[in-house]
Length: 178
Image 1 (spheres, rainbow, N blue to C red):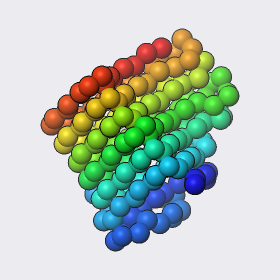
Image 2 (tube, rainbow, N blue to C red):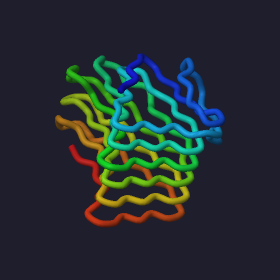
Image 3 (cartoon, helix red, strand yellow):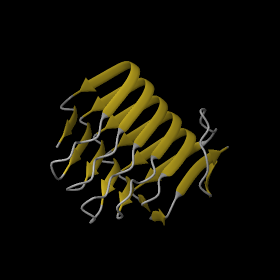
């Protein structure tokens, strides 16, 4: 299963999620939950907004891919709980364009759990990787990675984590590289 679109807003109200036109995101997540299991959610060149009380990715890919020569719009997730589990990936990548700059990944969550999963931003040969910016009360990484890198000599994007508690366990890593 998969959702592929130019720009994407997933919001949850009550117990069901809805795909709505691109717009702003509230500082507070909407009630309800968004679960993506054994699936791909991909947007090309445009960003995405996900807002829900709980956002869970299980054995899934959520990706922004920039094929052009401009910077992609960011992926913004606002949730009380964001859990990536069982080899799920949250990515922002440059496509075939040598100068494409990836979009930023902005996470505004009360709790982030990365369990056997990864968040990464990958730039092209001449394009810069996007920023991964996490604002959370608690961040838990277990056998997980947060990585920002680039294929060329340009800089990897910054990784910014603002949290009251960060637990990096069992072979996890956070890195930026060029």
